Image 1 (cartoon, rainbow, N blue to C red):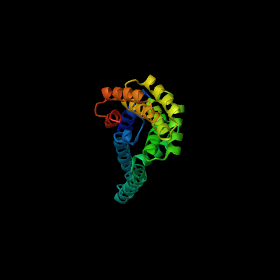
Image 2 (cartoon, rainbow, N blue to C red; image 1 turned 120 degrees about the vertical axis):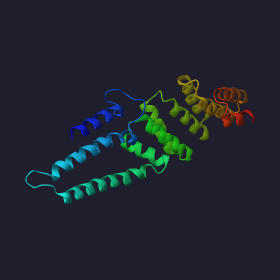
Image 3 (tube, rainbow, N blue to C red; image 1 turned 45 degrees about the vertical axis):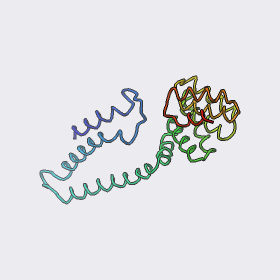
Length: 212
C-alpha cells in the first residue's frame, strides 16, 4: 500500500502546480501516471481485505471488488469522454470546472467565434481578458470578433493593445489588417498584412489581404 501511495504522490506532484507552477493547466492527462499508484494501492487493499489468518483467502470477494473498481472507472471514463467529443464541449467543460481560468474562457470564446456565436464568444473572451489582462490571444480574438461586428474603431484599439503585449503575434497583425481594410485604410491594411507575412509567410489570409 505504501508503494502505491509513493507512486501516486511523486507522479501527481509533477503536474499538481503545488511544489512548483507548470506552464499548463492541470488536465486529465496529468492523472495517467498517478493512476498507476491508485491501482497499486487498490491491489494492496484487496489483498488485506480478502485474506486473514482466521478466515483464509476469499476469492469471491476479490472478484466483487475488482468488478466494482472496473465498473466505477468505466463509468467515470464514459462521463468524462462526453467532454472530449469536440473542442467546444471540451472547453465548455473546462469553463464549468475552472470558471476562473483565463485560458479556459479564452479557448471557449475562440471556439464560439469560429462557430459564429458572437454574443457568447464576446462574453467569454472579455471574461478571459478580465481574468488575465495580458492574454494577447484573447485580445486578438476579441479584435477579430469586433471586426466581424463592424465595430472597427474598438477592434483596432483591442488589436493595437494586443500588439503592444505581443508584437510578434502574426494573427493579430492579420486581424488588424482586416479591420483597416474594412475601414477603407488600404495603406494601413497593406502595412499590417506585410508585417504578418514577415512573421508567418504561410498565413494565407495575409496574402489575400495584400491582393485585395
